Amino acid sequence: MPKESMWDAYLSLAVENPALFWTIFVVTLGTLAILLGQIVPWLTQLLLRRFLKEDAKTFYVRVVQPQRFLLTLTGAAAAFDLVAFILLQGVWYVPWYPKLEFSLTLTLTALLALLLFRCFQTYFDEYLLNAALEEGRKTNSELLLVGRVLAITGLFLSLTTLFAQTHRINVIGIFASLGVGGIAIAFSAQKVLEQLLGGVVIYIDRPFSVDDYIGLPDGTFGRVEAIGLRSTKIRTSGKGTLAVVPNSSLIQATVENFTGAKKVMAIVYLNLYRSVGEEEQALIRQVILESTQDIFGIDNRSTNIAFRNLDEGRLTQVQATLFILGATGSSMDIRRQLLTIANQKMTERLKSYGISFDIEEPTVYVDSPITI
Image 1 (spheres, rainbow, N blue to C red):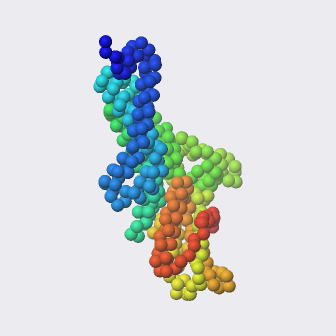
Image 2 (image 1 turned 90 degrees about the vertical axis):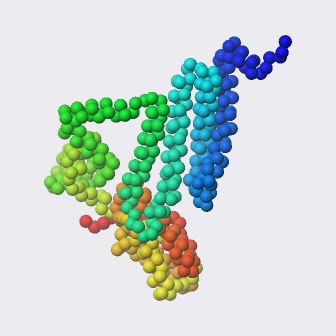
Image 3 (image 1 turned 90 degrees about the horizontal axis):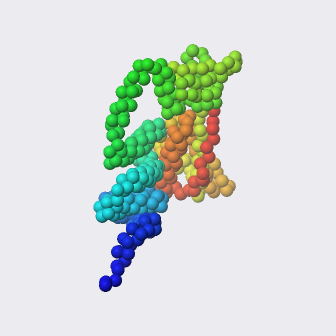
């Protein structure tokens, strides 16, 4: 009688002890998926070299490599999903596989979304902000912020739609039914919806925030105590009463934000290795001004550049004081990133003229109120 093969023994185990069989199956498949996932970073780098050629290595190191663990995990999830489909659907045709496949694909989609989101964030910081300053183009930090939000939103909507379509979830029908219901609700509660949409616009646009002092065209002036979905509460100065203003009125009115009327001083120190004369000082001043004039939100009229002699006149220190106009949240963060890139370009230009120096890190940022 022929000796029983390992495969036959494994199949007989599935009949005699199903729990042990599926435990061994999951552990084996998981180990195989992890091994296959280790190949994904190498395969990604190979594909980048195929399509990007000269820039592939730099792109991989700056954008993809920081997410190497997440990339490996996503590759392992994809391998697990693929092998499970081949074995459980193509070879054995297990009846409960569709339920398992839904969970596996949902996990894979979530990991892929997180990976693409982090890679895009890095790509935005490392490449798009740099490109925004090329060839003397004016850079609007608010537009960059909106573009980043739209790109991330489009990414998640695309993955959600793809997942829904592959699992026969009628996304179009859901949106259509929501649209019909939304029209009916809109007619019955038009004013309330206007106020709610006004609250959403305020949260997105952020013309003011809690604790800001604002003024309205009707003479209302005070501190913002709360921003709700329907209305905004303002503690009026002088009387101390609480004014409740509908958000729909605020988004249509001219709002003066007195708290936002400020500048942020960015102080950059350049320590030159030698003393410089008036001609080189003029050159340094020109390079600094040209390197920052294309950044939207930088007040070039207030830029101040001072020269100081150190070590009994043998060394020179340059103090460049730049002013970033008032902005809030992510917009201010982007302007600071743009200023950092401008500093790097300024450094390269000065060194091309043979002016060597050390730049003190980090740049000093100081809030500077504007006289109202």
